[in-house]
Every structure is written in C-alpha cells, then in structure tokens.
Image (tube, rainbow, N blue to C red):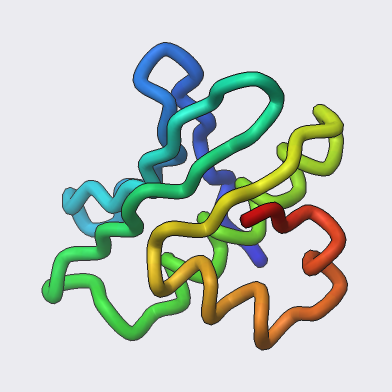
Length: 92
C-alpha cells in the first residue's frame, strides 16, 4: 500500500483523495466497537484498490486501539473474509 490514508477522527471516517476525488470509509465508535457503516469510492477512481487500502488501515487502527469491529458495510465484511487475519476483531 502506497497511500497515506487519513484518519479523520472528528468525522469518524478514513479518507483518501485521488485525482481530486474524495473516497471515504465511514464508521461509528461506541463502547470500544468500530462499526464500519459505509465504504464509498466514486466510479471515477474505482478499481484502484482504494477501498481495500482504507479498510486495511481502519482494521489496523482498530487492532492498535484494541477495538472490536462490526462490519455492516458489505465491502468491509468481504475484505475480512478474504483476509482472515482480521477475523479475531469481528463481533456480531
């Protein structure tokens, strides 16, 4: 990963701007559980691995902070299934 994904704590999201287009991963944090709500990558920059990079950074932040993760976003859930090293973070 070569992207320096920004963690916007105040907005509870991870952000990346590429070619002037903002992509985001939105979450809610309550009681030590990061609920990943939405991963949004506009079509203009789709297919470049941006969603994967943002999801990986979000999961690494969760691990570093000892948070659990609830992946309501279908992309985040699929990413975790494809990368089972993060399954220990998941709560239902």
